[in-house]
Amino acid sequence: MVDLSLLLWAAIPPLLLLCYYFFRIPFAPPAFRLLMFFFIGAIFGILALSLEWIFEIVANWVVDWQHRPCLTTSRCMSVLFGIALRQLVEIAPIEEGCKFAAVVVPTYYLQRSYRLLHSSVFLFTIAVALGFTAEENWIYLFYDTASIFERTIGTPVHAMFSAPWGYALGIYISSKTRLNRDNKFIIQAWLNSVICHALVNVLSSAWRYSLPLRFLSYGLFPFLLWMFWRLEQLLRKVQGKPPIMLISGNTLQRRCWLRSLVLFALLLGGNAIFGLFLLVRTISPLNPSKFFDLDILWFILTHFSLNLFFGVLAWSIYRYLRHTARRRYF
Image (tube, rainbow, N blue to C red; front, side, top):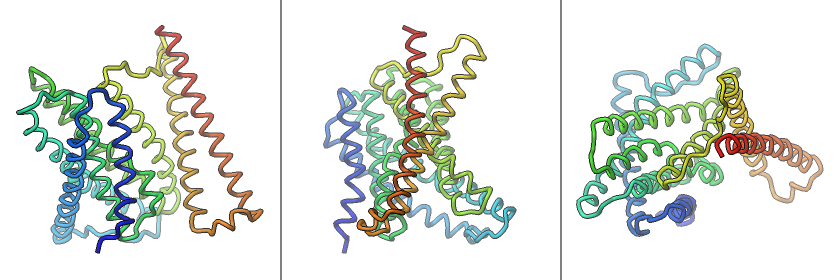
């Protein structure tokens, strides 16, 4: 019997995020149609899981595809390389391919009766990705391989993966004259999504290994923050708004300095979120009454304050870059 509470925890965060994007996009398609794409995304999530299971069986007949524990740095490097290859060959292409099909198939039938806007196709992509996330959430929660907090904070990740090809597909479908370069743009955007998807999965698994490979995990949240920024920029484009400018220097030296500040802000902001994520993971098993013990309270306050300081510093750098760009262009 399906646990209703797990189903709600799996579905409600993606649905709330879908509502957020639905109200942000003007001339959005009807809510019922978005829910249809959401459920199609969940169904194709099950299809992706089945294809991955079949791929694992076939691959294990040919090579040793299973993960092995690593005891040395050289052994960990080879295992990490194997994980990266598995992500690029199996996980990322299957999942991005299923999401792509989940958008293209119903959109093909809709465009025969309706004139679809660029923003509508982009929102269909987000709906499918969030439906895919809901199905994945339920699998993780049902088998108790991730906490509710971990799955909730990862709610927008599949949408961030698929945003490039969703944007490219929207350009192609809404265009009156479909050119070959639009097809190439879709292929390039889909490959970009596959690579980003694989890279995130590799970085998220790096914390399991010994140093120095564990340091790779500190690149995860800055990279996720950059992908969230990219999603927001693409969303502004489909809304007809100009992109937010951060690089505004006249000289190469000035532009390099501003790009360094952007990278520094991503590192600070991403790892501030990572630090808060680790803090919640550390204290979540504790009884709430223990939070007021002096040692635990001091631990919570110091770690929260430190990560909050880094987050505020990253936000200040971002505001400085935006202010500089406005002064340059306006």
